[in-house]
Amino acid sequence: MKYRMLVTDIDNTLLNSKSEITPEVKDAVAYARGKGIEVILSSGRCYIAMLMFEKELGLLTETQLGISFNGGLIYESLSQKALTDYRLDREVAFEIIQGLKSNGASVLVYQGGDLYAEDKTPDVMDYWHRSFLPITILDDFHQLSGDLSKIIIRGEKSFLESLERAVRELAFGRCCTFFSADTLLEYCPLEATKGVGLEKVCGFLGISPAQTIAAGDQNNDISMLRAAGLGVAVANATNETKAAADLVMEETNDQHAIARIIYKYFS
Image (tube, rainbow, N blue to C red; front, side):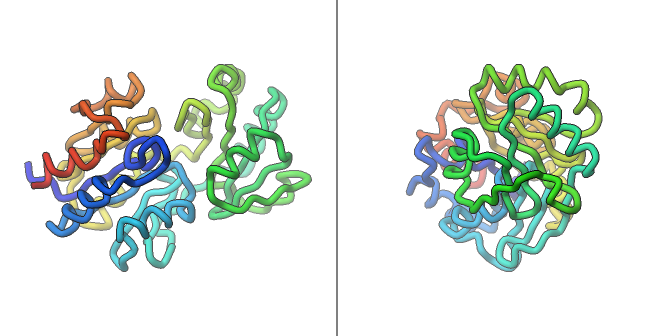
């Protein structure tokens, strides 16, 4: 199979543990693009927070696409124009928010490129510092009109696991729920998965999913690993992600796993 596109997760896959793109990975991406390979970033991050990585990799072109909000938003990188924009139904979103808050969660929400919270708790502020985005503190989320892009909670893994169990029945069948990291629990629209995002991008670019390689490390990457022609888990991936992958790399994100994938499959 001749692969035409690489879709890669950002955090702990493309980036090393210091949230950096190593020179080795940067050179490999340039090599792939020089051979006409599409390189697409796919993340739970807001599209605005993906801009710095697209710029560093030279991906800000008129034809470049990106996958944001775990597949909820497909956008043109240069113009930031949304091609698809799935949102959580407002009623569903606020029922879930209330369920999370009643179980002790400090909730953050995205509405498009805007980030909101109701309290400046340590977990909220830690997420804010890592998101590279401004945050607006509201008295009440009901001040927002319209539907929400996603709900996110940052905390210790054990707390998030208990929180997910507490609101599982409320969320079941109404939204996608997953851990995008050990410390991040997310609630997204039912249509928002990275697998759907990959398929949408393939449709826009005229590329078959069978001609794509997807790489990731976390459970929210599983759907795109399954949707791609070749799903690759980096060595630091979760056990669930490794089990879903067609191939598990020997290299971690700190050992330039993405560069290794590029030189092995796109040479």
